[in-house]
Image 1 (cartoon, one colour):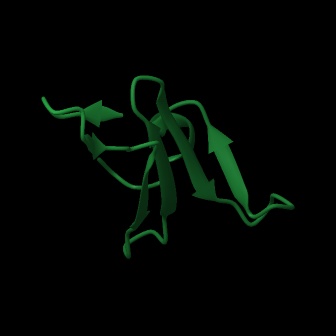
Image 2 (image 1 turned 180 degrees about the horizontal axis):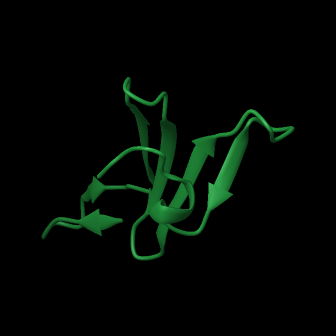
Image 3 (image 1 turned 60 degrees about the vertical axis):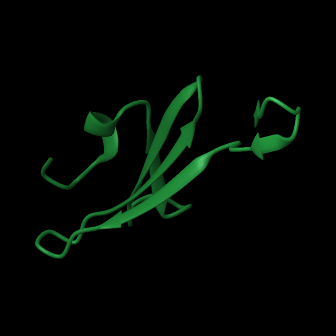
Length: 66
């Protein structure tokens, strides 16, 4: 949360969500970025009953080449 010099609310970012899909290997990924806290990574996983697998970092879940 940030304010300007007159104490007006400027930004209220709680989290940023990015959905990434790449066509060459079918990798789908969701990234949830929490300012000052970190990022959670999720990847599509047909073997999971929820359909998604969570990892602590991109290397745990990302199927795309970076």
